[in-house]
Image (cartoon, rainbow, N blue to C red; front, side, top):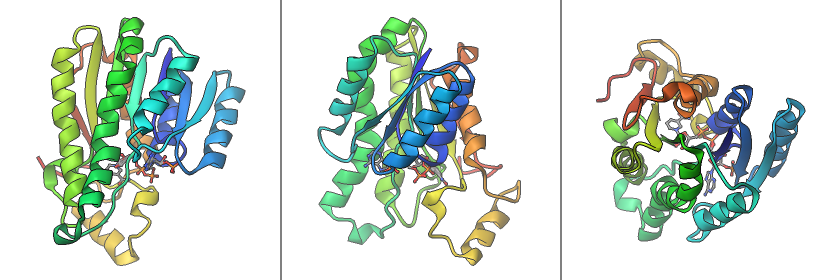
Length: 242
Ligand SMILES: NC(=O)c1ccc[n+]([C@@H]2O[C@H](COP(=O)([O-])OP(=O)(O)OC[C@H]3O[C@@H](n4cnc5c(N)ncnc54)[C@H](OP(=O)(O)O)[C@@H]3O)[C@@H](O)[C@H]2O)c1
């Protein structure tokens, strides 16, 4: 089995790549800035007996998704899973979000996953049991006071997942995972007070780990999830935004 994981250099994407390799996937490790981390991961997965290779693409650029798809097609003629994990959460009040900010945020978090899926569809269909997993966010449902563009993009992924689950059935399943607060660089800007405020709001009393999200993604990407499509799994410690 072969999987592409976008944003696999760090955080949730890296743990997802590890979980998929453990479960028998060869992995294309996409990254943007963290080249050394991506290379270290490729070595780690390779040492475990998997084919792993890295590919750089800036998905904020108009040609980013196309160039990534091109690199995958150059190397592989079929693909069993795409995990659309790459994303960025620029914090800004609504009135201060410029046209360019909107375009960049929507491109990275919504448009690139859509275009990449379209470009790689022939490879997924060749698999016979292709899997697409979009990494959305609790903020798709709860909304964000610090990033309306991010919440809108992540909500868009849910509509995209539901639509594609209908259109691409039965050869490809399409699902989303909506993480809550997960301990990665995205939360690094939290002060200790912000962190304890977050923890208090979560029924399980703590933020989640990247590995806990990765396990759910790995399930959706696996042959075990053969009768699951068009759904969203919430990985948020019990927050009820919906
Ligand atoms: N952590 C949370 O609390 C949380 C909650 C809900 C949803 N999420 C979502 O989970 C996903 C993973 O986030 P994370 O928490 O693991 O954050 P992270 O540690 O900051 O990782 C983000 C990943 O996305 C890649 N990326 C960012 N901008 C990119 C761009 N313009 N082009 C290509 N790749 C880009 C990064 O690549 P490089 O580092 O190599 O540049 C990195 O691999 C994101 O979609 C995020 O929105 C996270």
